[in-house]
Amino acid sequence: MATVEVQGLTKRYGETLANDHLEFAVERGEIFGYLGPNGSGKSTTIRQLLGFHAPTEGTATVLGADVRDEAALQSVKDRIGFLPGEPAFDGSVTGAEFLDYHARLKGDPRREELLGLFTPPLDRKIREYSTGNKQMLGIVQAFMHDPDLVVMDEPTSGLDPLKQEAFNRFLRGERDDGKTVFFSSHVLGEVRRVCDRVGIIRQGRLITVENVEELLQRGGKRIRIHTDTPLRAADLDLDGIVEFETEGREVQFTFTGDYDVLFDELTTHHVIDVEIEEPPIEEVFLHFYGDEHGT
Ligand SMILES: Nc1ncnc2c1ncn2[C@@H]1O[C@H](COP(=O)(O)OP(=O)(O)OP(=O)(O)O)[C@@H](O)[C@H]1O
Image (tube, rainbow, N blue to C red; front, side):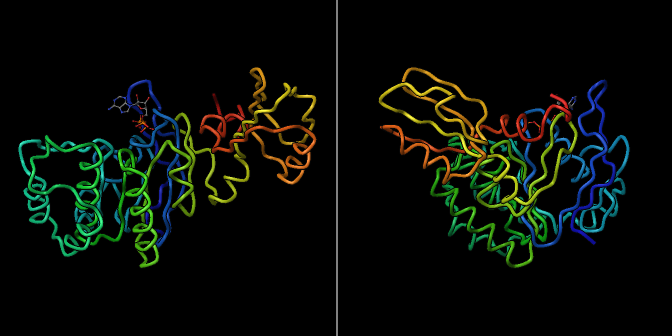
């Protein structure tokens, strides 16, 4: 049985259909990214997986427990770690006191190991913490009892790039040890660096579940080129160019075609500067998943 199995999961808040008959599974030993723009329904799914909100229709199982069955879910809770999107810390306690509290609830065999990697200032009151320090404290809390499944809502917001990389390395190690990680994000770059597969949600509906490599191939890259004479779209008549924009001697477009063909073409122009970036997530949704999924 998969570690997480979502079966027709549906959640309505009044008129809002926040999750619409979702179907997907997260296998043991994978890092699964749950990607979607703001308000698409990611946190709603997470709240149901953890039993905070009841599904309107459908259900999910987590480590074999049906999320509608409070007793079953309770029996697997100490095998689950959770990092909320906006952790509600009590600012008047120190980081150490916060971890002590959680340790009493579920244990902390990996606390010291995690504090070697993530370094919140434990003796200070949480109200004095920076966003990144709070995030690190939340990460230690989520993993210190050595859970089999960790669910995280936008985990790397606030971490600096070095800590983010340390976190990604740590997650890969957990995955290799057979742990399962489910995390939501609205940042394609965050998901691509660490996830094996990604589910894309938009307006409550699951658009696709893909391997990250496939997603990136479909998503293309945003390319910005500065030339000494203005380029027009017609000068770059290549397959795979969309969203072409020009401003003075700079052009920008999203490219999903063959890089060799693009670079050959560019040798016929005098290029002063080139930037290649991840496309904005909305563009991936709009251009590669199309309007039939609802805009
Ligand atoms: N408790 C609630 N009551 C009413 N509507 C809600 C509630 N929680 C979420 N919603 C609505 O459900 C939809 C999905 O919200 P959700 O928070 O799940 O999105 P999200 O993808 O997690 O967004 P973000 O990336 O901004 O956190 C939104 O339209 C939101 O306004």
